[in-house]
Length: 367
Image (cartoon, rainbow, N blue to C red; front, top):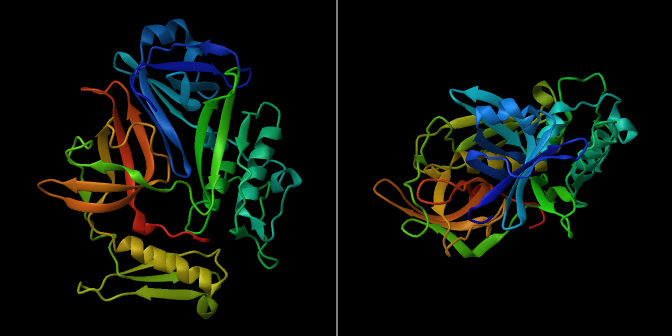
């Protein structure tokens, strides 16, 4: 990502015809996220929308942000609505499309059912099925990444039933990447080599996306420009977690992770009925406890574009050393970037709003 000026483009999702190559969007904000589509928001003139309604037709219009001849973000417009004298547009990147698609044929058109199947392969099958249906091909490619994270056993086969309309294809992908020890993904967009086409990509990461970055940092007085909120919630805190897995009654799998740390004992429960092994359940429960023991987390920082962390230097999933010191907070440690939004026309110059989680919350198989 780079500083303004930026150019906003729209085109028809089915035909690929360009609708606008310089859409006048104000209050623009956009960015990706970890294991999700990311979002874009902005404002259009109602006069423009009234005179050219197809420029931002929800549900069938792609929208892109370009800066310095590079595409920085792409996705689908989902919402256009009047807000006073202006029209607000909202968009989400490519994985949001699967929330509007279902398995009408069952087993992803014969690609399933699944026994000891790599979750990455199931994700690829879901996209292949969705894009094989007429008028359903977005041209999205999914990385060939493989993992050791499996779904399905001979006793508990992983199915995608045509009659189960409670879960969209997007819900299925979410279930495949929602826990520790599962793959991660993010959506990216770029011009192809000769800039005649667009590469829409689902980046799969195993055992993780991103890397530990020792060349950049987020620091108060350097590039952090607002005092971030420090979250300290006793409602979520626990140093004892009781987790359950598959089974019923006294046969239900159970693991307990507990520590004594000089604080009043607080307990929490968690259930993962799909887990059939005590070793996997034990790992999940320990992760849950580690997460619940995190007090005083800084979940978001706002930074300027500086040499300490130039815009575009970090990626989704990166661990970045973070130093926050103000009247209320004193924090120094590694934080993981789980998403961000770029505000290219923010007052005083471009800003990036970075979403963070403590790096200690994440454990990775194979590392």
